[in-house]
Length: 151
Image 1 (spheres, rainbow, N blue to C red):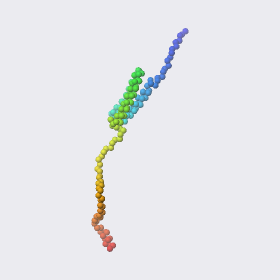
Image 2: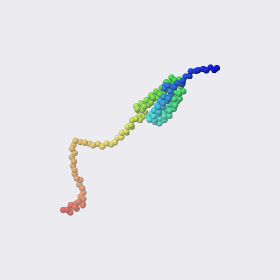
Image 3: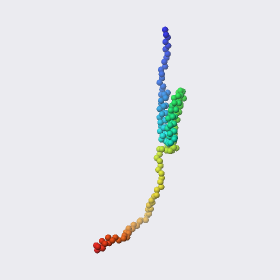
Image 4: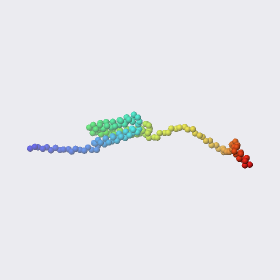
């Protein structure tokens, strides 16, 4: 007779919300998207292109690095550090843009001041005496002929 051994089977546990990786993936993706928009809006030239190329590379490297860490406490603390660091850097970039450290893109450019000649009108307290005089005209031969013929 064969002897059967009964072993206790432990059911597979579903990881809790804190142990899942997708919330960090979503948070990092959203923050990198916001940072890319800020870089595209606030920077120009090579700084803009370096930021737009560097942010996705940073995100992929950070996610790969975090996924490869097996120690739960170390992984969780690094996830929090990366998310908080990215959020603080976004706040610093927006604050720097609003306080005119970079070229401020939120203000309208000031118009150039152009000096134009100004006509001045002098007003005096004297009353002007208007004298209307007719200028002497040379006699018109037609009118002279008409006047003479009427007489």
